[in-house]
Picture (cartoon, rainbow, N blue to C red):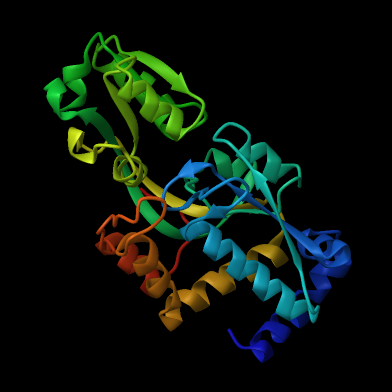
Length: 293
């Protein structure tokens, strides 16, 4: 977006800023923005060394920060990074500790009661990561066995629901984060790790022996990922949406996508080789903030 357009956005937001102490006002006043990051949500938000968050979502969040800086007329805007987990990310955004979270967070109606979501920027499906030697090909093959998933994710509740509905008697093992879930599988303490397929692909990409693993099973549910921000903050939401939409319309979003999904990425310099899906392509043409159905 050019500077003229950004300044027009600020002028549009001024009435809302004066009516309430919202996120944009607080960011401008303190001269800094707090961006959340995940430690192992490859390729969206993860660490490439101590205190060095990188990823597709991190780049998008930084783009929003730059839009705010230009719109405010400040010479610089400090970026403060805050690590979050699947369990604490929603409350930290809701209570204002974090200004923006762009990671692998599912946009759904339950979370929308506590936070707001920008326009969607990815679509994923929950599946299973298993060792090829296990002989496991679908969820039913895990009846009576241990299956890991990350605490605080939509997959956690979905697994328990499916276990009851299909009488699978699954032993759902909670993992503190995605890297921990992979370790449970790698060490044999769980026979599968259930999570969104793109996150499983990222974990497998960085495994010591990627060929030892496979993503299997029918999609358990479709997930729409979106940046998360405080609820009832229309001025800030409009700025985030406008930044993302401009990227989608200009082709900048697709260039960023190719960087993280079609090219070698840290730390092992391997590529996910994942083209843009038809569902995401539709979203680029007509951006929406509605949950996936």
